[in-house]
Length: 286
Image (tube, rainbow, N blue to C red; front, side, top):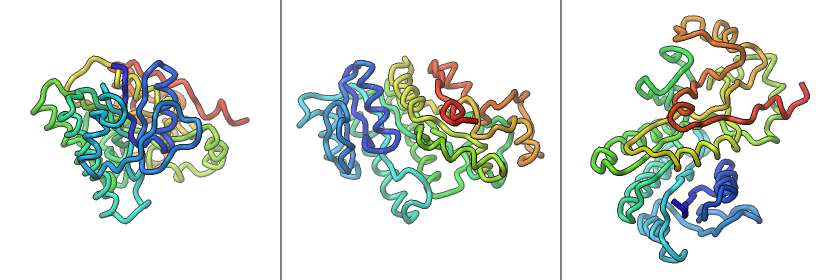
């Protein structure tokens, strides 16, 4: 693996992924509907992923000097409420289908894409079946955006059944943050219910980029989904106390220690070697 296509390269996570992969020696072809900020490494191509022909050309390297070896598909309307529901579904799901199938057409067998923490049941009303939440229970989409992500995961499950050599890894990213976002975190502390909706989770974009690289590099085939979150929560309150206050009837699968994440990253640590490096408190004077 040397040449990697990154879709959604102008987005909040995509820009960081492009920079991270380039820093680790990969030749990056970036694509999005809008141009990225100046200085993004690698080459950039404007493309519409809802057009299957354009996606095939991107992966085949028709205009970029050669085919890619792998894909990090991060392009999507990134959350519920940004667009009408039908628009969100019509953009996100066909785009992901096109990337999955174009990869097969182009002979690319290594693909990582942005799924979402929302498939776990966000905003957790009704509550999750247990805590910390993990990848073991069936997805519980509660919005059209989340439904689209669940459909994408189901597509990946069957496409890898049809083609056992294909690797499709869905990264269920928590709420993506950049360092400048941490200035808002002290305001969360007075009311735990404000961030109850995702069990107080977040992911630093730099750790998200690490997870993308590790997923691309791991020697796996088939479909796998991984929760990708920081190792702590957005709160200063111990995680067990947060659960007791906001989810008193949710069973605990194990003891919760300190401020550890309630979006379990155990599977990502075990299979990907994922090791988050960034904590919000390192950027805030508290």
